[in-house]
Length: 396
Image 1 (cartoon, helix red, strand yellow):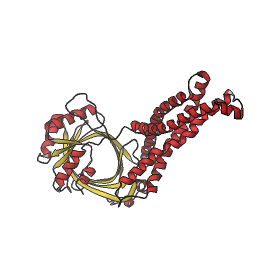
Image 2 (cartoon, one colour):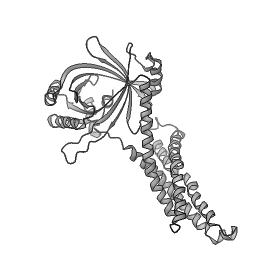
Image 3 (cartoon, one colour):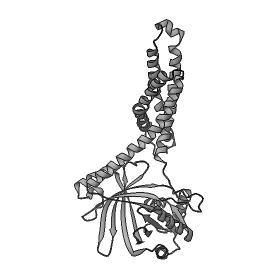
C-alpha cells in the first residue's frame, strides 16, 4: 500500500479524535463499580434486616434493642459491598490479555495488577465519600423516617455518591494539574495557552496562495518563513482529565543565522464547538505549551540538557528514551487575534496534503469564523491529529 493511500485510509477511519468528558469517564467507571457493590450491599442489607427481625435470631439472642438493630443495618452494607469493586476490572484485564497478540502479550498477572489498582481507586473513593454519606443517610432515615425500607435508603445513598465522586475526582485532578504547571513555572518554564484547529489541504493547492487568501480575508500581516526540527520523546506524563501530553525538543530557525531552541511539554484536548444546525462542525483543540529556553547547542536528548533542574524534571517525564523526528517548514501570517500557518512536512515523501493551522488566544468565535472560511473555500480534511500522528500514519 502506498504512503498516500495509507494516510488517506487512516484519516478516513478517524480524522477527528475527541477524548471523553472526564466527568463522564469517572461517572461511568465509579457508577459501574458502585452498581455491583450496591447489588451486594442492598442484598446484604435486606438479609440483615430480615435476620434482625427473625424469630430464629430472637430465640438465639433474645429481643434486640432498636439501637442494636440500627447499628447492624447501618454497618452491614458498607462491609459486604467491598467485594464488588474488583470484578469488572478483573474482567477488563482478562479481556485485554486475550485480545493482545501472543507475541506482545504480557503475563496475566501484569494485567491483573492494573485491575487491582483501578479497583482500589474506586474502593478508596467509596470509603472516603460513599461510606460516610451512607451511614449519615441511614442514620437520619432510620431515625426520622423509620417507615422507609433500609434497602431504599441504601440505594439512594449510592445515587448521590456517584455524582459527588465524579465531580470531586475531576476537581482534584484539575488541582493537581494546576499544581504541576506551577511547579514547572517555579523551575523557569514559560507557558503559552491558545486554541488551534488543524486542516489537511490537498497538495495540488499552493500553500502560499492559501495563506495569501486567508491574509486578505482576515487582515493578516507579518508574513515569514520558518523551519522546524522537532524530536518527540515517548513520555510517561499523566493525562490530567484526558488531555494528551507530549514531550519534545524543538529547534526553530528564525533566519539564516538565528535558531530558537526549547524543551517543551504540551497538553492538548480537543472539543467540539456546538453550533446548532450549521453546515459545518468545528473541532478545535485547547493547547497548553510549557517551554524552557535552551541556552546551549541544540541537545539531541533530554540527558544532554545542561540545566540540572530541567534535565531532572524532563528525564522523569520521558519513558524509555525512544523518539520520533519531525522536520517541517512553516509559512506564517498573523494579526493580534489570529495566526495562520501552512506547514509542509519533509519526511513524508509523497505528500498528498499540507497542513494548515489556525490559532487564537481567546476569541473562539473568530477561530470558528476562520475555520468556516477554510472549509468553505478549500478542499480540506479537518483533523485533530498532530504532525507526529500524521507521520506515524505513513509508517515513518
